[in-house]
Length: 249
Image (cartoon, rainbow, N blue to C red; front, side, top):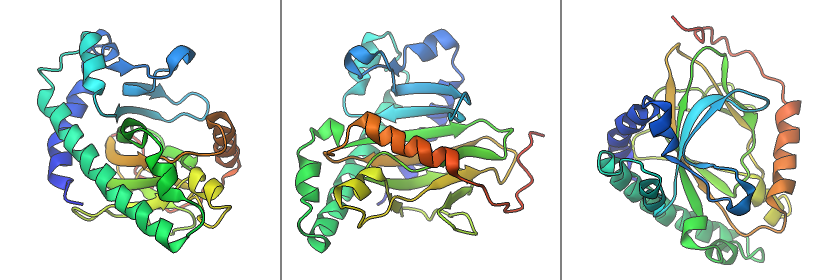
């Protein structure tokens, strides 16, 4: 999936956006949740409360720039950023449709591609850019994803551990790691296992990464899936990999 160059062009814009003053950052916060008042798109900041991590993330979905513009966000200044995210998203969506089509052929009877295509194009996936704040050994707490599958696309430095891996994953240019989330397990009656994963600091620097979450129609509600994820999150015990460079310089 040849998106590495585009990701590396987009990241400086993303990092610049996180450094804008709070009033300008709020213009890039988008609420697509209806009447739940739970903004989770555009630029979001988390401060490590509860099971949250200390991070910024940016959720891109098609046409989100129209809402940001209506909020007063400077989509002219960040026009190139939006254009890059749009193309990365398009390639991720195309790639994952091929992946889920192949899985559907290998596991007939679960109607996975049909459940994927039932969702509107803007609901089939979300592109996420992450910027983890340093200072903790564990940057992203152990969890499974709620979605069907995740593409881990790029990162500034390694630190992602999956399941019982002893070594962290290392990205290769224009290649993406694919792993499953809870919806894959639910909709295949456990044939596809969700990967529990976390990010451990391997340097003292801020860490960025880019992932794509793919969704399918699921028989469980978002609330029920989140309860499964939360339970696994609180029960996980972290091994010691000997990474001692997590403290800020």
